[in-house]
Length: 313
Image (cartoon, rainbow, N blue to C red; front, side, top):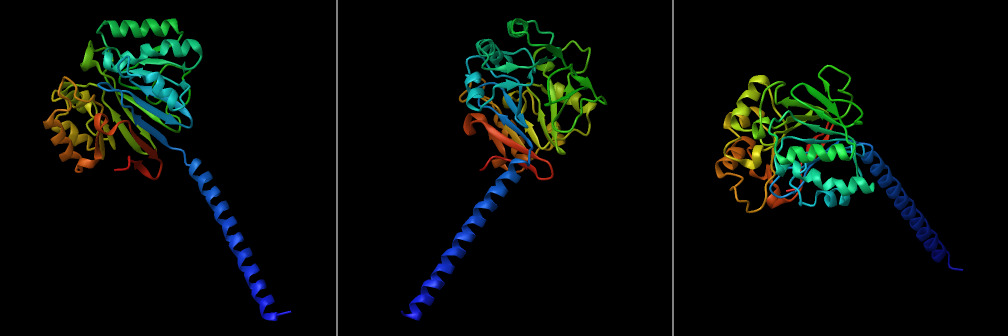
């Protein structure tokens, strides 16, 4: 027998064993990494592409909620189903315009068939008694979805939908996502865009400001109530209309990212060119200003201690 051959085979065998051991280590290491990443948690905020309208999907710990529903016939139910959403803790309709509340009418068949559950409906004190508001409230009654009215001072989160939105200082501000209603004030007879519910969504020290269709007069008054208001992500008001988005308001909020929810080639000319210039100036980076007509649905992850993770450029 050739001793050199034996030594060579023994050496080769040791090399193969070492390689197998390293491969197993790599597999276990990868598994451990995935597990740690899954436990990281966080809040996911997705500005859905619903054409000329607004619908913002919130996700925390496999719980979902919806701020506005976009227009009817935008396929919102199919979009939710494709994302694995079978239950919404709550739906908030900011004001009684079709492009913000019309999509709620699509829920009828899905809820009645058991394909979707809606825990609660929140509405603002919009005094505009139009067909959208009446239809939404009528459908909620038919589907036995509880309805609460929210106004400045209301606070609630993502964990369950079993009670009325509570005022600040109550037990509503549990760990996790927190939605603070900043506008409209209680008792004011506001209607349509002026009555838009404005909410500051907070998680882990980071914030997303949802402004719906608030106009410039409302922006000025909101800053009187909340002079230190700021947010990391801004939903640009009224789809980028020139009747909103004053430079004073944008500068105060000073977002790191901005999203315009808007329909492609819409008849209103949204977003207005002056508004886009103001956004580029305030944000400081044109690649951090997103439009759903060009970028599709836009998702941000808010991670405690890590910040806001934006979409890939």
